[in-house]
Image (tube, rainbow over all chains, first blue to last red; front, top):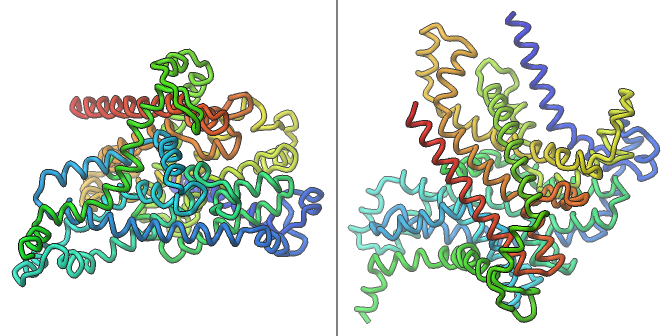
Length: 273
Length: 298
């Protein structure tokens, strides 16, 4: 009975392993096939020889540009998010104003706002600011989009820091700015790394704002580049799959090193309903 | 000069300085757009030229727009499928991974997590190839096992398009809820399980009488997330079918995008956007009300 139970359990577990792992294996292996090879041999066959020609071609088609663009936008946005969210959280967690609670509620409610209701006004605003079709135009929406979860993570963390540290600094005559810079920021380092890494993953994968706010290929970020690449080369399956693998690769590497922070960010965003 | 310094260092001014950057970005890009969308929804507007005030005409049109209501029904189907399949499977996986008797739990967990690393575009593109009529995984598998009658253009057939896309959506979101449930299960105090064991409870009983009740708040949160997520869903469907064929997999959000950025009817697009916002808000508040009431009745 026990053994039977275990067999069923692990059979299901292996089935799910197959469901999640296999599509990626399929993409990865197919990305090394030649186009004719892909169409003439079985989908299930291994590549006749492992060749990286598709990868070279993808990069030559401009993927390095999209890659750099994604990197620039995410780094700038995440830097602004980490600074402004930790500053706001500092007030919410530590200052004794009713106003702070209000602001907090506003940010938390923001997690539930469907992005589409902001799309047209943001598009319009970006045009008027002269930021349409520029990487700078993405920063504002990306920061706003990332703020609620980030503030939530910081507030939770700061609330767990003993107040005595700051009180000692106050007695020494430090002002609020010095306390934030010299006391709060150093102790919330772990929260900063969670916020930075989690938001980088989320923004790396963002698509809607990029779709609406960018138009010329030299400005495309990776998701938009991949999307248009498929539109252009859709029939060349292995080539597009190589592009797909390249777009996911940075995140898989990030996951290997930072899975703890990524998971923390994902669960933090949903504790509050 | 000293007065100014004193003012700058006062708590009130410091609070404003600290809050200003976050409020600036959030106010400008998240909050202000909501009333702006409402305002645009009262206009006829191509996005670039003159805005013409037309009162509630867009709203009247929306109420009679068969495609909007078709997409609304599709969103409801997505809500039912999301809550009905993602949460139970995710819970099952989380229980499996959290059990101390599970071997290779961390290996399983690592691979189960993979879909969360894909952008929705990457998922969309990948599943397009999985469903490809001639060279896709699904059809070549069906050929292999000899079920030729089942072979079809999964995404091109109006009867299957929506459900085919839902499979991809499930693939993406089951790991997410799995991670949520796993974190919640790990947080349950060990003593509760031990006490249940001492009382003679085993496997399924422990799950029913300890794990499940303790997870109740997490499950409700997950259901709300899933509900709101399904009502505002966009990107994987957009990347796979664009809402087609012939609106068979249209969602409110893909419809909003098409009306606004393909047909350049920004006024009407805003109307659809505000409708999505209102529907998501009303349904999630109703859901929370309902679950609160039933937990009081317990």
